[in-house]
Image (cartoon, rainbow, N blue to C red; front, side, top):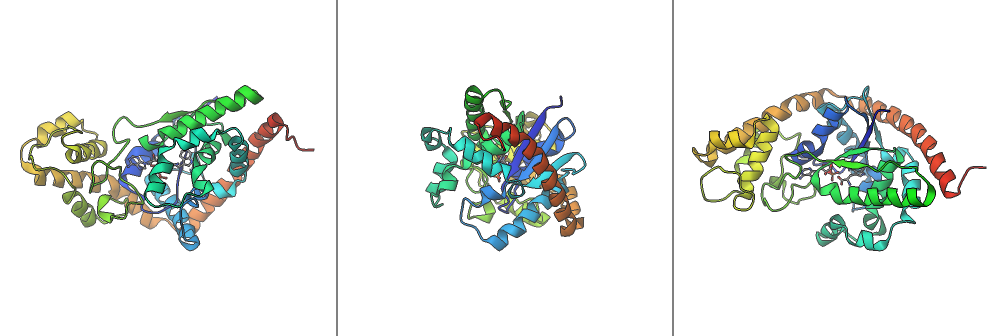
Length: 327
Ligand code: AMP
Ligand code: TRP
């Protein structure tokens, strides 16, 4: 049988090149080789303070960005998590098998609460809902950026616990993380990852930014005072980050970029990085503008119905396994 991939994105706005280079690019690539399911995880987006009207808007915008990047509803299933109740149901079942010690180790929870998020129960149990997303669809492979590895480990652990206790229901999924650009760093602090929630807009390049904004952001990226372009993540994290971004956008190996830009100064190099990013994003930006919100809604409605049918079939197997068979 064809292997299945599943991945999710939070509809929280500010979709940036880290999301694209770390994850979405693979989503588009892998939809030809796998049975692909992609989910806008709106239930996850409720774990931090949000505005309902804004969530409504960003759900559509996120789907639109994915479609513009090349996620193709004829080849992949694209839907919103809240349309499929099986996610929350399976999360509950898995939560009864999740030791609190496991959740206490989660770095994303620690980082988010340290950054000021209120520590509600949903944010704490976020990885359990994520495990449910993946296992609900019996996924084998999960294309994500490096920051999600720990959550995939929890998912594998929960799948194994469940299978040991109730029989062989879930495949054990694996993370699929790109070799390069799995962790795109912030442009204002190359020691922190680029993030949607960073209060500084200068820290990221958004997929929908205008070309002149992209150039400005990259020109003002924090680097160092030694003018040699060289890949060295410890001594030159800012330049190394730009080299990774450029390599990912052009397909040129880092070594050849270093050969080309080693001398000549940071100004010339940064302009070349900006050119590469602008060129890489241009086709998706054009497609984004051409997409109608009504069509995006149709894709999500259809996708949600199909995903729900599939999930119901799978969930009846789970219910039977745990002693909750329908009468
Ligand atoms: P999120 O925005 O947290 O919903 O993330 C959507 C996808 O983008 C996930 O697969 C993340 O791992 C990935 N991602 C988020 N930030 C970065 C980053 N700075 N570098 C690489 N991948 C990222
Ligand atoms: N936690 C992921 C993130 O913040 C989003 C997500 C939710 C996800 N459920 C998922 C990713 C299932 C992959 C698979 O980026």
